[in-house]
Length: 287
Ligand code: GLN
Image 1 (cartoon, rainbow, N blue to C red):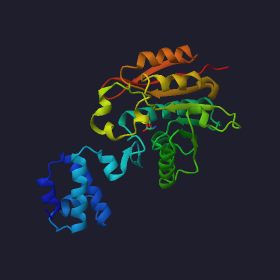
Image 2: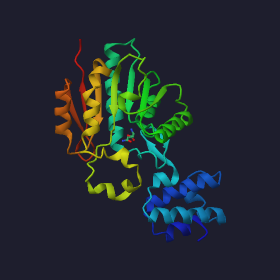
Image 3: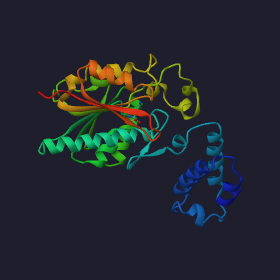
Image 4: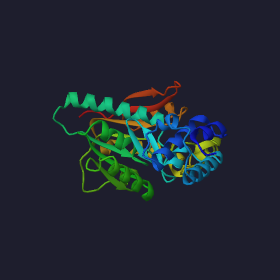
């Protein structure tokens, strides 16, 4: 087992997983581009490369997510460093980022000179906050997380993506993480909170077994964190501001009632590529 071609022909890993892991090793061990997977596939590899490949192949066969094995995950238009202290960012969450960009455009049209302030509750790897900072350098972004390790990862991502100046990170639970002396409201609030019911069998399957359970499930009923976020959101949203929350595919009706109960208006559902409503947005009343 000493060339890329040999490895690819003989591994029992899924082909895409094997290619992604090999590209990571090629970039790490050589100054070759990823295209070397094809163009240099008959060159003899060194023993360090082979040893590391064997280790990653074994761990992947055991079920560890590829994103944790290579320490990286593409998200929206950026690449994020990830580790087992953060949720692996998902394509569904890119929908939330796109909805936020639309809302921001609408707000800019109405108030062209206003600096837009945005809050990402439970930022994890920093996925939502950093994708938006990258997409729009004019937004002022605040991001919170209750996990010290997650916030450290988000801050590292901000530094590595050169977005550190634009995003302020706060450690703590939801709104409690915010600086009390800062009474300015937010124009957009976003969150992909833990929304999986603790009894959902998916928690014991696939990648989810390796992800931080606190990032996946509220350990109550799946709606608990969403309730907490919505209960206080009017206090933190500027008049006419927007909130958008990611949720499970069966939670859209509950989320819209919670939004209405908490005084929010113009509730909208957005579907993922499979057609399931996975993000719900609403607005705060204007004065
Ligand atoms: N906001 C992060 C993401 O969407 C983390 C979410 C979480 O940990 N529940 O990837």
